[in-house]
Length: 140
Image 1 (cartoon, rainbow, N blue to C red):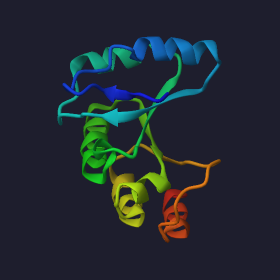
Image 2 (tube, rainbow, N blue to C red; image 1 turned 180 degrees about the horizontal axis):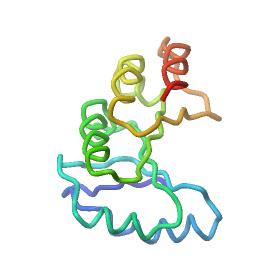
Image 3 (spheres, rainbow, N blue to C red; image 1 turned 180 degrees about the vertical axis):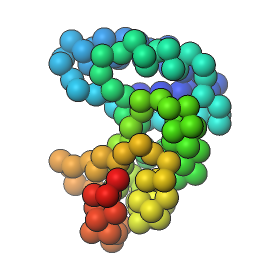
Image 4 (tube, rainbow, N blue to C red; image 1 turned 45 degrees about the vertical axis):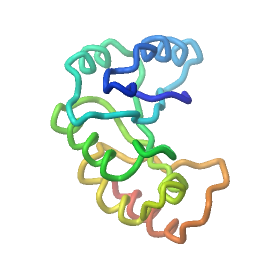
């Protein structure tokens, strides 16, 4: 879904319930969103919202400022601490687009993200770290 989990004010996107319903109607296995503006604190409403969903949520590092490594590490550390059922879509090309080191991200995120999913199916800019990232993510 081309939208974010968090709005600019840090609140949970009010359209997320609608997105879950669309994904359910399409028999999707998961709903993928970009992170958006995570303020550092998980809203209490997020846990109950996710508990009522029949499919899983995955959050991708996108090509915006909010998709950078520091924000992703902070978010997934909070997710892990809260025990929320949110996984990560690890888009290697997006690390390159945002000027981040994909290999560094692959080394830091497994400690916080429940699991990584390597994006495939589209041409990404060559950051030079693809073999290392794939190798590291196989063990996530």
